[in-house]
Length: 187
Image (cartoon, rainbow, N blue to C red; front, side):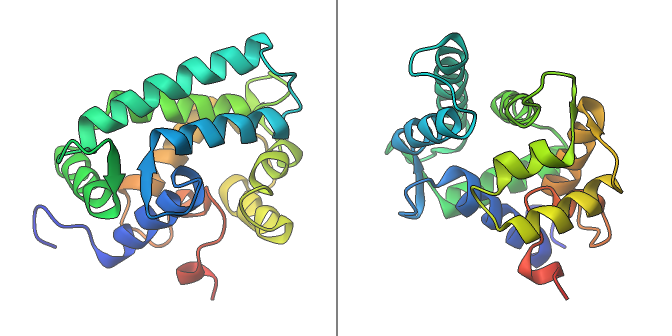
């Protein structure tokens, strides 16, 4: 692998999460409106009333995350992040072995929305409650077993799974299943 290039495996994972989580309107770009749509989806999934404290916190958090992503990845300053810019950003992150601050915030946000009970662990039902809105229930069950071995996932374990997903080139890494069972690992 060249120093600035992702392997095909890494690129497949990164583009999968681009499509599943970030590009809410499926237009091939990440834009501020994708985050607005994500906020509403989270609110509905977690059954929060409009403008409750959690909803406002989510709006604030995702607003900051969008600003960080745009500042880091939107190299042509067109207020959207293309797949090419997304891949370039991850090449830079992997090369420097650093997670941008906005991505750390997004990881924390994702743990918090998954941990619906607030007990600092994600159980299978919590994982399914959130991710079945993005992938099938069957895929949720399979993925949760792969990433957890049937146990609850702590915040630190979630952080390691997150790093494995975005950084690892190891096809056996549990983190590869954090966002479902990718087609390229389903066999």
